[in-house]
Amino acid sequence: MSYAALSLYGLAALIIGYSKTAVGGLAVVSVAIFASLLPTRASTAAILMLLIVGDLFAVWHYRRHCDVALLKALLPSVLPGLALGAGFLAVVDDTVLRRSIGALLLVLAAVQLLVNARRDRLARLAHHRASSWAAGLGSGFATMTANAAGAVMTVYLVAKQVDKVRFIGTSAWFFLGINLAKVPFSIGLGLLTWTDVGRAMLLAPLIAVGAWLGVQTIRRISQRTFEILVLTASALSALALLVR
Image 1: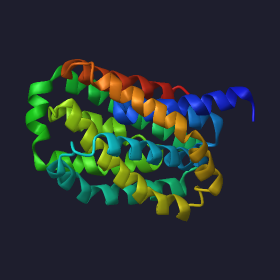
Image 2 (image 1 turned 60 degrees about the horizontal axis):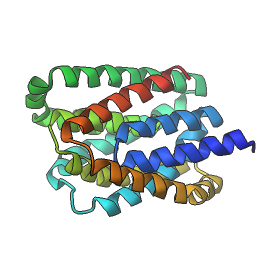
Image 3 (image 1 turned 135 degrees about the vertical axis):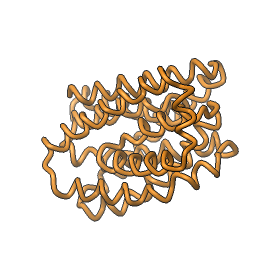
Image 4 (image 1 turned 180 degrees about the vertical axis):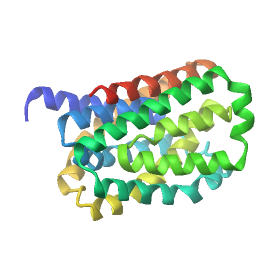
């Protein structure tokens, strides 16, 4: 493996740790990095192991800040979304998958801009029960096919005007649960290998460093700055994956 590839893996690990405890949308940059280093289908399982390690650090740091009511509203529709995503992965090739991921994330980027522009109106819509079902279904599908549910959750939680610490705490528990739920799907599709597990263990210290930096960042920024950062990061990282 070249030094360039090793450096990119290390950068992806740092970004994952940082995104899990600070600016969630940045994780899609790591998705794009892995998709550039590995075949698209294989990269979805390879990065899954790193995301789970990052989730564990995030849950530890924000374990007292989870909104259980929000989780209960989202979870019923996540499994159907995961199943749809797994079915999609089973029938498409790498080219179709890559283009579909790019198109999905571009749509999410556009939705994020809409959320920022019409915050008050969309906040009312976000409290409707159907929005929770849509967010859960979209998160399940997006995370199974592209490890990109962060963009869906960003739109949903910003629209609901969730404060920054509760935002990260709820996201941490949510993503730990759905990423663990994805493991049997990835094994069943023949995508997850022991190499992926070993790579995640080797990169865990860098994920920890990124997580620590994220915690320090959140302590120093305002709620409004946090919302702008997570929306902007999700939009830019979506475009980065689209042009890959």
